[in-house]
Image (cartoon, rainbow, N blue to C red; front, side, top):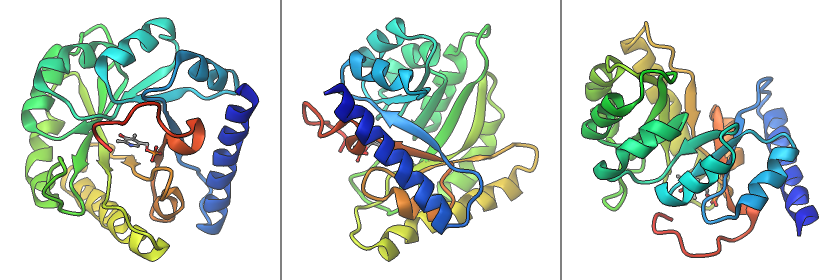
Length: 233
Ligand SMILES: *Cc1c(COP(=O)(O)O)cnc(C)c1O
């Protein structure tokens, strides 16, 4: 079991390395191990292999894991209900799924001032799907200046979950749009260090790396199929 998990993890690290080589990238993206629905023992196994950053979608489940391993770096990546912002603001280092101004305001108000600012990413509905949350590209350019000013938050960049596509060429299109959008936003906010593009999952990490992902979020290809169906994906 454990050896199997370590093998899968090594294979993902190898895929990342190969993709960086193909893309002629010197700096690899960070790997976020998406551990939602997976037991703490799997997290501990990977932590022993040197993995530091873990992604979670469900607040209650995450809080138990964080309490057990506060030394790891915890990223919230799931849909956010406004009545759940306080535990997120108090216990996570990063939030990838900020999709409304209201959520940004609440995270800012509720981030304890003795902690370092909460790193946030704005979620972009890059494939413009009715069923998906996230700002439109247009709304990002309108709203980000306001969000960048909020205290106790550090706006670091953008996150997206594009529509599923089969070919590498089709997968790359929305990721390329994300790269361009981040560049536009950086020009609009020259004083903000926007260094993060969170994109690429198990099925499309190579395409995301080709287009400049700085964080890839991998669940299934590390941990195997999820134990119970996720309500997000
Ligand atoms: C579950 C999830 C992932 C991981 O997806 P896999 O296809 O299992 O690698 C990445 N990002 C988000 C936002 C998720 O909810």
